[in-house]
Image 1 (cartoon, rainbow, N blue to C red):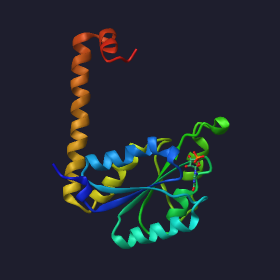
Image 2: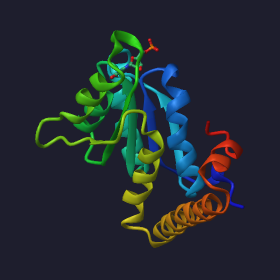
Image 3: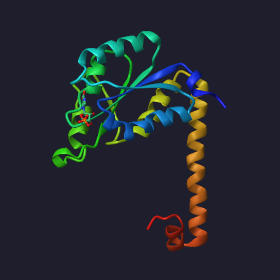
Length: 182
Ligand code: C2R
């Protein structure tokens, strides 16, 4: 088994607050599963604006390939990162309980970038897909990474096939009960 701590980080996973970490950890876990090193940092376009720019420039110089930025509410982090790098930026709008917006405020803030400065925006709280998408971006130029993503996709397909076989065998009521889905 590869020790992920020994692999050079290729993805910077940034978030505005430690309150974002319970969701954003899924991006790091997805990358880890695909054998890609990442760094996880708390940096905020609002609270630490200079450090964001310094980090992005430094990471780019170190050979990072992609940034993933998660933020809630008035989510400016992904946009500010995208303004300071030519590398691809994936934005994860995060759900905040404030103002009852269910994360739509962050979704709009993250997705509505002006032409010329794109942020590839995943679903609200879609940190896992952000990790997988970052791996796919890296995989476009790396056959070994691409092979891992292909294997991962085959595995999730096989999982659903075997779940369906169980559903057919047991019927939906017993299946729901046994899976604790009721
Ligand atoms: P606290 O939980 O620390 O009060 O933060 C964070 O991402 C978090 O979801 C509340 C929310 O503020 C967000 N935040 C941003 C940015 N920095 C922090 N949207 C930014 O730079 O965009």
